[in-house]
Amino acid sequence: MLVENNVPLQPHNTFGIVAKAARLVRVGQASDLSAVLADASLRDAPKFVLGGGSNIVITGDVKPLVLKIEIMGKRLVAQTPKAWIVESGAGEDWHELVAWTLENGFPGLENLAMIPGTVGASPVQNIGAYGVELQDRFESLDAFDLDTGKTFTLDAAQCAFGYRDSVFKHASQALGNGSAGFGLAGRAVITRVRFALPKVWKPVLGYADLERKMTLSGASAAQLTPAQLFGWVCEIRRAKLPDPARIGNAGSFFKNPTVSAEQCADIIAREPKIVHYKLADGTVKLAAGWLIDACGWKGKSVGNAAVYDKQALVLINKGGVQNPVTGGEVMTLAKAIQTSVYERFGIRLEPEPVVI
Ligand code: EPU
Image (cartoon, rainbow, N blue to C red; front, side):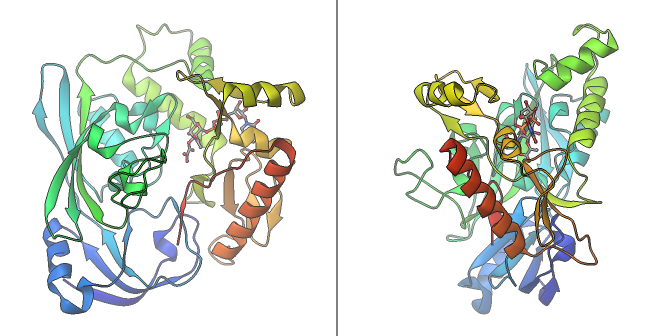
């Protein structure tokens, strides 16, 4: 195990923020984590787990020990009568995994194409797009417990998945639903993830942008192939979302807020055009992008942090690699957006990325 000092983090976060990690260990296998715990100078140090850095805002040099997860490998590990079970190392690139599953005849992840980040980060916020969430294709995962040094396996129920949420986002005794519970933030390091990919493939359509592609192609759902759907998702994302390789960003910066049916009726009376979706439990999800757009934020900036002009939900680094945004600028812009949305709609937007 090699401990690197003063490691530049700009290449390791998709905003392209400049910062250093005081100490960083590359984790190529679970035994590297055991080695960290066996080292007296590292064992008790606060730790920060870094995957693809696609969902973080770095606000200064990182003092905790950074564990950079580079556990690789993708393979078919089992099958059930209904599903192929595919396993991936946590350090694999998410989009490459999606492409690999399709090339190898295990479709089911195509709606989640082009989401930046690593496989190990995907369960943490239960990534989702175009009608599919990670939890719909999840089988189990292996994780390493930094408190006990033991590895353990969790199934979907134990991961407590919610909208952009899981047990990995919460500290012990503080689950998102307000009830006391088992949280694993800062404690569990995900090392491998297994997916159950249905042997009988059915396209997940229904999302407005995909329906439009369907109509334009003239194809019926029965004729559609996984590769075609994958291609459409890639096209939609390229048109709407900035490519982090060219314009630094962390995807959607805020979660879509949920309100009660009464609250929503109240808001609609004032704002008839508000984009909203009714959920099965009677609550209503509002499009945060619409709320931010309606407050006139598209294209506005604070220093080198700006609101993307094609999608108000995404904050970007408009200074590029040469003149990069700071975490402080991103957070100042985010707070100004939160304040203006709250003042106009009475709704508190919650950021999606982890701020360190
Ligand atoms: N809208 C506006 N103005 C904007 C942005 C959006 O009016 O600037 C409206 C759109 O016209 C649409 C609605 O808001 O009617 C929703 O927008 P969109 O369909 O683009 O989806 P979203 O709610 O903005 C969510 C996810 C994305 C995911 C897409 C597709 C969240 C926070 N975001 O975005 O996830 O790709 O749906 O499923 O749930 C991510 O998490 O990083 C992410 C990109």
